[in-house]
Amino acid sequence: MDMDRTIHEQVVEDLYAEALALADEARAVFDLRDEASHGNSPNEVRIALSVEGLRTTTRVMHVLAWLLNQRAYHSGELSKSQLRRHGTLGEERPSDPANMALLEPATRMLIRETERLHARIARLDEEMRAGDEAESDPVSAMQGRIAQAFRVA
Image (tube, rainbow, N blue to C red):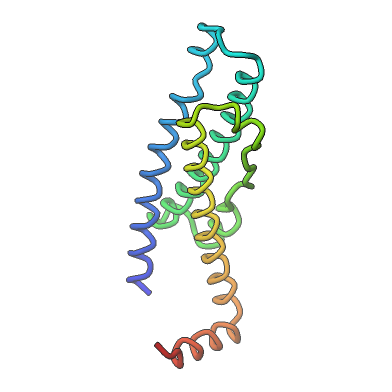
């Protein structure tokens, strides 16, 4: 079990580094001050950029909050029950295809990367919550251990 925790800690650290890089890239891409000063984009593009920028930064912030809670748990700053109660991943709000069609390819690629990262974190969160439920239900935990013991490779 200690090995699982070590692996989980490393996964969290790697994902945290990736999320920070995406957050920095999103900040640079969606900084509308530069766009507003040029004023040469059609209104539809500026609106699409604004809407998708908000969705993207919110998505990244949800991921970062989840990862920070995981890091706090691993460092002993949060208990398991606090993590279960407060460590939920924020809801995903996928991009709008109509808005995406108006954006530059590099911007679309960044948005897709943040969506993929959120999906990876959501799967990890789901697996962890399923494991927590199995731990809290002794019968299910025993069934899981039996199934694992008799698993055929």
